[in-house]
Each structure stands twice: as C-alpha cells, then as structure tokens.
Image (cartoon, rainbow, N blue to C red; front, side):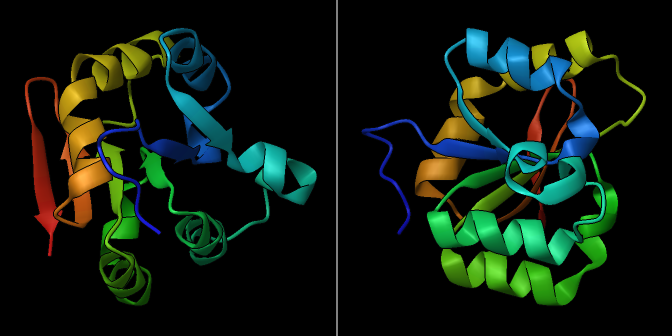
Length: 134
C-alpha cells in the first residue's frame, strides 16, 4: 500500500527523535505519526520490529536516528518486501532543531524515496541522502 509521489508520504517517527523534531516538521507541512502516540508508555518498551511493522502495515515511511536498525535483517527484509523506506540521521548528536533542519533540507529527496523508492534503509547526512541497505 505504498503511496504515490502525487500525494506526500506519511511518516512514522521513532521515539528517539523526541517531540521537538516532529513538532517542527509538522509545522513545515510534514504528515507525521509518532510511535509515542501509538504505543503504551510513550513507546518506551516497544521494540524496533514492532513499531516498524506497525508503520509498514500502514504504508508509512519511517524516520529515526537509530542506526542499529540497519543490522536487523528480518526487519529490513520486511521493509524491502513492503517497498518502503527508513530514513535515519547520520548522527544522534544533533539538537532537535538541527534534526528537523536536516530532514527539512532533504525533504524533496526523502519524500520522493518514501513515495517512489527504491525501498531500503537510507542515511540522511548533512549534504546528502544515501541508500545503505540493501
């Protein structure tokens, strides 16, 4: 149930991005759903496989800063089979404002990959977005 680029993709935001980053992206026009709003206890005890599967079933592109997801092959295989993408910031050391700024800087590319692919795990660097898996 992958969206077309004719309509902007919807995003599922990992709780590790906090609340400030999503709030800024929503103000900039992104359609976001937050793990912390969907799962009990603010999503604190929800595993990556669970929240990602939830997003995949809804056709949502995922946003995170947790690079460890890149090593979870069962999750990544389901991601690719679904035709969807995860976009991960290259650094977990960014402030919420810098996180939002980096996603927003690469909005067109992230939205296009989210809607049209190719599926996979993408890392969002300061000056580029690079597919790192498969």
